[in-house]
Length: 286
Image (cartoon, rainbow, N blue to C red; front, side):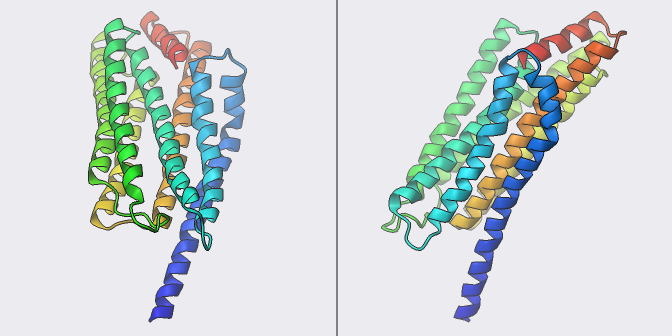
């Protein structure tokens, strides 16, 4: 029985490692798949906030994924040092937060552009973003400090319930309010007669998809951790899938809006003034 359990643990570890490497492979595949659009709609255009956010969303998580694979081999070695184990957990918290923050900033700028760069909206969105970010950072710090509490630091303990709750609340605040404001603006556009344009359809669809994606990923990880403490290998697998999803989501959001705005400006000669203005504002705000 002991041998069977040992074999199962070994196979589970290899499976988790395979998923992590697979997440890295998907990011590399996504990089080369989107490279033609990336060159056409980003690198051949004037540098703007879009360019920096895209670089952040594409290459920071990719580098984090590579570092994670290397660190995982060091952490799961026969006798890793405590510094490596603690550094690995801090690295995951920072990389995950940076990836999530980038996606949230992309969504925030899209909503900001929809509201015609209103000064009141600027203050409101800034307050919402900072509130959510603060809750996420506090939650992450609590999770890091509570992760290793025993004499064997490379064996993580049960995650802080308060830390998980604060992090989830921060993400929920940002995503829920951004989605609500998108729908609120879309309902107003129907009265102006341009609510059925491709631009508005993309905003609705993308807002819903991002909200559902983040809700499912975060709620699933938290639920499993609260019901049954996840092993380090499973957390590592979840982290790999998490940042890969955020990276692909952020890049796709930017490329889709860039592609749509360029296509409308080049081909749609029947656009009304308000439609063209909105596309132009989103193009420059992104």
